[in-house]
Image: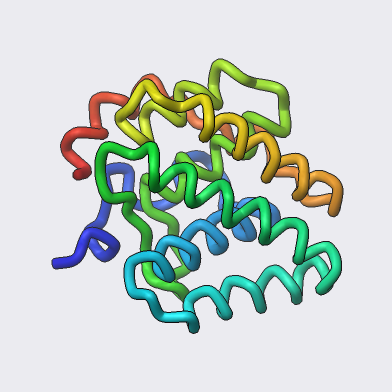
Length: 168
């Protein structure tokens, strides 16, 4: 089975509520960009772009997608393992997608320690400064468009750190 189809620990969206519009935007963007890297199939990128253009409008989507691409690239480069994601169209989000959303939420709510803990839990690496910077840029680009993730989206990454090795 491919890494992107394996259910991760904590399978679906963690928490007491379903992800909102802003959370879904982040999760779907993360999913589509990782799929594009893994498959080299431009339709993955186009799917993500179309979703952002519909939600934000073409002009705002250009900025947000530029920051999204930098964010995902920085995570792939810093990660000690292959990042997992569910296929486009899946209504649930896996552990890695949820932690990625949590990083953006933490950035938007000025919860830097939580963002750094999430980055470490997701990447399994202490080399997270570039990822923190790109997360901040992406989170800011979304906030400018009015897409602010709920503070309840910030997960307790310390409880997930033990699971990083088992999710490789």
